[in-house]
Image 1 (cartoon, rainbow, N blue to C red):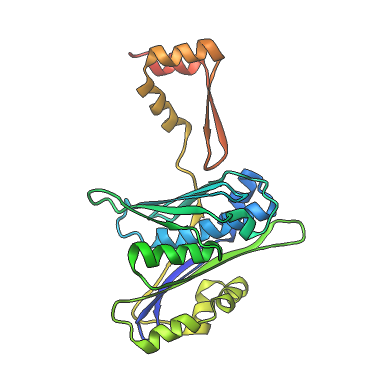
Image 2 (tube, one colour):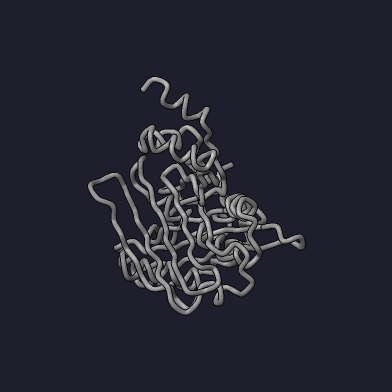
Length: 279
């Protein structure tokens, strides 16, 4: 299902990205068994990163977030690519405070973007006391000098399950005039996401802004980790047979854990025999 839309609004002077990230956030919350406060902050971060992944220019592009704070949530890590495969984790899965308590008073947000050209771009900023959305807006202002409005939401049903999550982002193009920038600052992105919840991204954007003949791109964003048993076997090969067999002899097995999808992989002597049989 196509749940992300990119287009131009305000006479083609402002870019708009809207995504329904409900399934992504719920998958992450389930995999990591998150409390509602943890799921809320985690969900806002991975939703914002879904937008940033959609901005990657290269087919091999990847982008990652490292958010570290002295708040209840601790650190948050999110990774995405041009295919809009998203994954992420939060250090404290059982936070109990509100967004402000989860983020704390001190911390930093760091973005590493690799478009496949030469070396990756790294940008960072201090976490805003106003929350996750303001922190991402601050990042764009400080690191990329792009006037940006970001609004994310995570809503829960009575059972604590994620009922809806989404992100809406407006960014001024270099030639945007004063009228367009004023419209960007006053647009009700909360109302737009409320419409997305009821009607989906295409109908909601068309109802609020109209349909652009210039840019109207829809894509599918999903929660998908890139770890696998085969990939980790490749990592074990790099350790060398002697070290792999020594670890298995001492511990009885090798246990590899993926923080992004909360999956454990167990490797035994039988795996080692198969891995190094031709060596």
